[in-house]
Length: 487
Image (cartoon, rainbow, N blue to C red; front, side, top):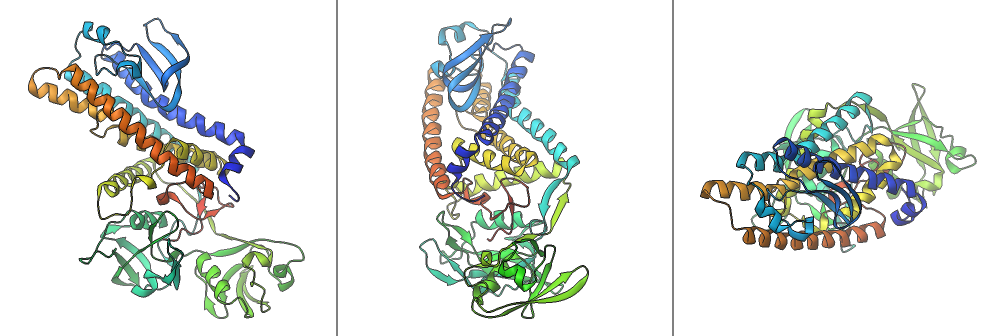
């Protein structure tokens, strides 16, 4: 996607509506879990709200539950006075809460956990749809083979330094089997493991142990990542392998005059084998003023095309050629999809609390960022939107079960403490703790949203762990298929 994300959203209001709808649907599913569990366990639910704060509109059903839409679009809630009083934030009535019979411990645990359970079930249904239909992807996304090792990388302070991968001795064609002892199966695993990594040497240098396979033999290389990009995330200077094809050739362009045709697959340049898009870009960049002989695979035969000196002096786009990677359709079963998302959520939480990592709250995405990612995904197609929805629902489930007051996990902790001590916790203490953490959580949302706005202004709405180089020809999730991601 080119240009400013903000300009894109203004020009595509329908994508914004899609984003708001699916985020709202995810919140609705979560709160529906609480509501239905509360009804099942005989608990009273005076209000069911999408959004926080004063209501915009609503209606009351025959059971006395007021269903409403509220002004602050930062979540939703089901008011459950027997579970924990949330005061005016959730339309609570302390006097009414005291008059209700206390809920049993098991009831509290079931109702508290039901929201997360419904999110997981919803994610499973969506993952099943993707599994059956098949998800568009690219060859570069489905490999862990290194296609290019950059000689240099540009750091966050704009200094160009030798790339950690080249310094460590990585080579194109190496297959990455593990990073820091954790197996990797696709390129996104490589990106996630590196960005979320927390390896350090005794002298404080960042480190990552790459388990490789080279010419059929195992090899372990210790790489020292550097912080790159405006977000200051770990990079080593590698990109994925995969066939590079000519997609379109503009009539009359330098590429057309040289004889390039749609469907040509690049095999080598000046006798050097090209293993991926990164290698193609790297070769063009390093040889801007040299004549280039492209060895292509065309209709099963090998042909050569000569690009005169200076053909790529202004960048590969000067050729008038659009390059793509081989497209594939993958069918990943829903269990593997969800397990992958849960692992990613765990890695994110661990990176946030690990002092050796380079991931902080500024790298996370809030409501603004989530909506923008949804909107960007809508351009790639319905399956991309479903993939983002799965990610969001798993994240909602994991986040809400954290043992933090005001979250569902906090309710379970309060209920467990009350069970162990044999009497309820003082209501004023519970209410004070919850209101304190409401303020902290709202402050956190404002903080990460400020960074969302900064990312949007730069043109990439995604948090660093999700930022990839997009291929507009390959409509995969979350926003566009990576071609390739460059850790």
